[in-house]
Image (cartoon, helix red, strand yellow):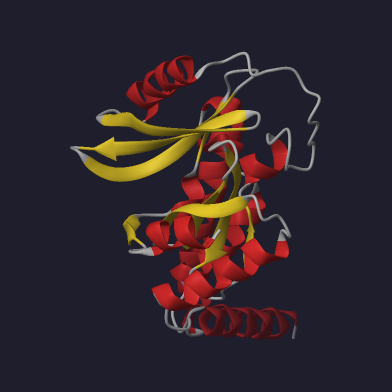
Length: 241
């Protein structure tokens, strides 16, 4: 009887293991999530290990919106007109007539928008609009490093210690080490940091920010691949705000 009992248990366990292996998307889905999630976690983990000098400075929040692009069955990406309307809505919500939209770019994960001050020509705020849901939020460096408009804003903070020229050199040193072949290009100075566009073989590639006090680098890994400029908006904003 004991032998029959043990045999029965073995048969049941074997059946359960076989059923688990046959569940659609079971092991494969877990492997897929593990591969993708592990890639994400590994990327963040690796970057966290390198500190702010790498793409590590990316906080988890901005990636949440962009990650929608990895899954099937998502809605169609926003049109440029829809993205423009959302950007205008955000601009109006600031209740600051001195601000206008400057750069407006589409990436595979989101739209990137920079706001500058009309009175000074200086960068003010950077935001991203999720390319699928339309939700918007400030970029992480704009929240954490911005000494005027950010979470830690302090208008009385001392003048920036790192100039635009020094920031460009810091950016290029970082790119040579982490993204060989890419070059530092156009720079916009914000309160507390500089944001620098990067190019690859003469074409727009991405961007990074350099802290104006510490020299730390924060690469914008959350955008995804560059798609295009949002045409016409740059000129329209100059006339409207």
